[in-house]
Image (cartoon, rainbow, N blue to C red; front, side, top):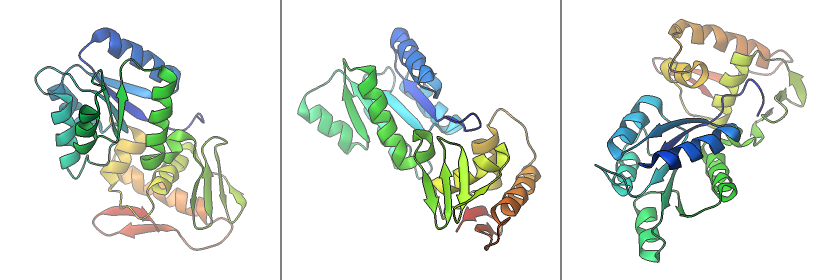
Length: 231
């Protein structure tokens, strides 16, 4: 991934410390950020606090089963779009069906190869966060290539600072979605950094200027009282 991109955040939910460590090591080696949870209740807390881009969820968990965790995640409007890959030693067809009908986006049976798991992870990220899978993003005459870290408009290259690039990447992953200033702060700056919401307005202004340097209308829409959207 390009140096200024924010790697996808993967939540690993497993009650076995060795399994969590193995997955964390391989995911971070593949360029992802990770956070872990050892049981279902902790997993739900992490989902609310950190909003991961994808969840690797073990079926057999203490306190709250993976099936119930998945059901709760998929029943909430604010988390239902997070891809969930259910990981389980239960390989019978009824178990797979139950996992998928509960809302899991994919089902991986233990033991599995890391290469297969990473391939499935990338496939699910392409749907919800395409830039995290190095997929070229397009919207009208805008094109963002995360692998080459290049942005063009009407085939003319644009120069964007790192923050403006991440803002545009966020907008282009979900054209039409209205992003509040707080959500943009979490996504672009990160939850561990304190930045005033007015800073978002400053960088939106810089992004608008960069996008219109060769002419054309402003593609960033201000939604009064709600935030910003692309298109």
